[in-house]
Image (tube, rainbow, N blue to C red):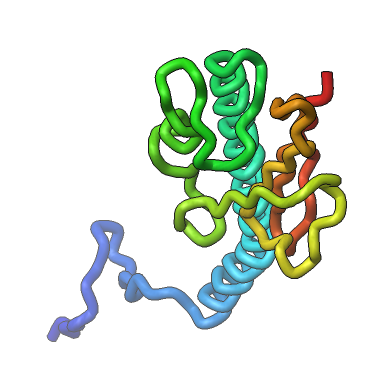
Length: 167
């Protein structure tokens, strides 16, 4: 009598073992995934921080372009504050900026733009929040503002390279 086996056979007559992984193989795969995650997550976080700081620098550039546009329409004088109106077109600085401020990349809210007093390096540390930009206006001489500094703050309130307009 021929012995009947319930185990499937391959065409060559050998028994086919179940197609499952051993515990060692699974542990090796989990360890490799853990090592890759440990390497990539900090790099990803650094990339996000650099990207957000780049957005702050971009916002600073947008503000500088708005300042240049305002000065072009206002006989070379820069705005004293966000409500300053230029001579040509009777537009305020904020209207020239499209009616709203750029977005803060850290909080995803409208970028708070401060107009503190001169000199620009006297900002209180409590105001140097990440994502903020400040427009420092030199006190006007003969009614005209000729110089300004735009400073922005990245992660942890670290000041980014300021944009200085001083002819």
